[in-house]
Length: 210
Image 1 (tube, rainbow, N blue to C red):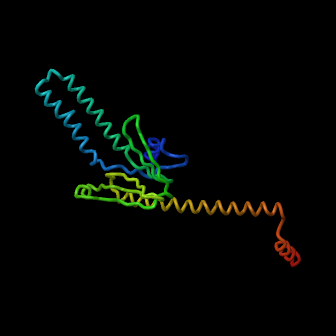
Image 2: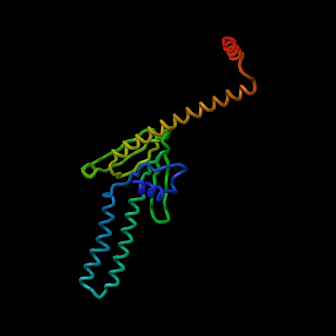
Image 3: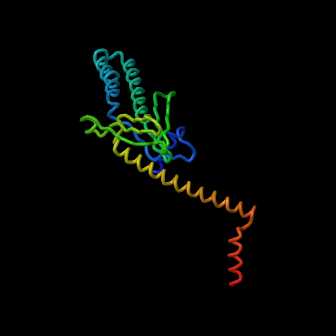
């Protein structure tokens, strides 16, 4: 588990801020990429095999044809893996991979999320457990959607849990900062103006009683 966590952080390191950690990754369901797989399979496997049966002397061409199909297949797999949401300890990072030299990302901080919803439509999505997960942002009608997400209900649950933990930690941190600020102000005031008269009288009374 630790190795996988480090591996995930390394792969998506460019999208993370300092001290930011990936809690989990929300992927699109692999079923959404089946049409691409079928096209590659037919064009780079079925058709070359048929031609090879008719013209076996062109084996070199068929090999190159099949190798191109393998490369295209790897591109589809990478497209699936890198088209995702990174749920971190700070917010949600949406990553979109369109090629080796073109990637885009968008960030939604937890304090900017107004609502989280998931939509599962139709028989296929119900049977195979995928659907759309949507984040509503504060201050307007703007939404961010991960289409064909795998197990959107679980993603929604984990998102809510991560957001609640973030809010709790932030509130605790803010309280500690406020306490430290007030303490510094009191110390600074005493250094400049001394103790208040009431405190001095109470101190003298305690000394006399002793």
